[in-house]
Length: 231
Image 1 (cartoon, rainbow, N blue to C red):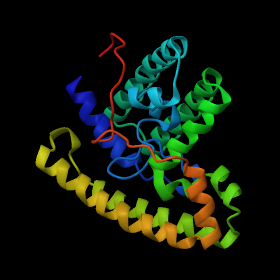
Image 2: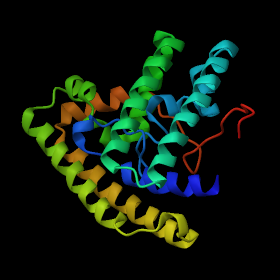
Image 3: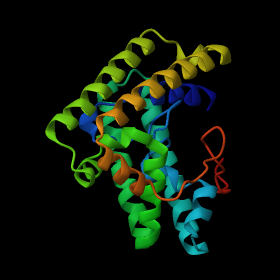
């Protein structure tokens, strides 16, 4: 299990700034304001988020089962990565998994809960959510603006890939992991500012509205998971 966790760490880092063509799922970001943990389906597994959404016991039970299924699927993907799996194939599998799980979450939540969860997802991703087609449509981004967003995220992705080349995630020390996270956080901050600068003032106002009421995520970003007897 320890080996799987280290492989998961490396794979998550490698996926953390996927191509903008993936429409900014944001589900695998580390060290930045990305969605983290598998899109909205990962976000809704956090106990703090479930309380914010005012989920009832039946919804929590359904999400608990979904969370268990997600972990089993992720474990299989991580094991494949540890056996020399193709990175692009891993990315495709994880994006497909995130999309599938988000659809299942939408079947569990009511309309108001889904709306609030989207707001929390946007807050979590920050300006990286500008890569999502739905966000681009809502903000009426021009073709030039979309191109700028794609360019910034692609450049960041290329830079991260340089960081990951030759990295031994399995044997990486805690100090080395912290240093890598810090470098990624610094890069995230710079590029978030660049993404925000693309927006016009009316678009910035609309984006603020789309974020909804501010929500304080748990320090460290992972939050609490409800006990599912599968830890």
